[in-house]
Length: 343
Image 1: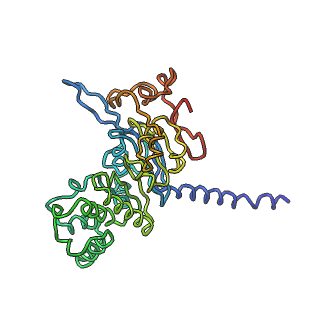
Image 2: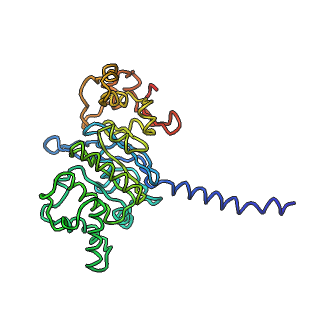
């Protein structure tokens, strides 16, 4: 009888280890308590800290798209750049595919397996390089091609993937339109065979018709190569179209995170509600019936963030408690996280 009781012990331990490894491998990216502060001179021999990102935590599953929205200056782009170690984080941890990004070796690994598509297709491309040289830069840095012929074949393959012809490889960025330049930027991001891409407002500088083409191309590339995206934008309609989940930032803090449909149909944070009320409605009848919520006051300076909840100076629900302590970013419904005292 004792033998029957003792035999299951090892398999149970092995099963638990396997379950933990599976849970860990489910996420491509995990960000924990990320902080990014920049020193700003305020006078002779004096400075203060600009809290661009303050205690932000989230995770992204493999193959999904997390949309990150908020008004200009809220810290969206800084989050993306800090994740990729373009800015060294002030505090917090970034885990990529189960590995903590701290050591030089882990950062080199991250820069090969994660890339960024920048917002401005005009300034993000070197005007002195041909398109072929721009696209080949990650290939050369990571030594991905053994011969010149293999390198040239890879460049033409990447241009073809993003809808550009081989004849355009010898041209310079100023010879292209904004949409074509952004395609070059996407081809460059794909050159190192990444698994994760930070899309930093990739369509905000483009015409509306070109925006749709680029968004559809990003979706096709995700399906073809199994990519994971962090999609940063301020246009909620674009974000809803491409994202599986949406996170909302305000003044360096994350205030809400939920499934894309859940966030649009059941927003809980007052800032999210006001953002959604400003989204244009194509139906004129529904547009007349809808009421836009106009927030009072101006966005506080990140150099002088209000005590307690950062949104309290503009919030219609603000109470005395909001000024005393910062609300916890907690789960109030399945996979729906909100930072508000009055939910």
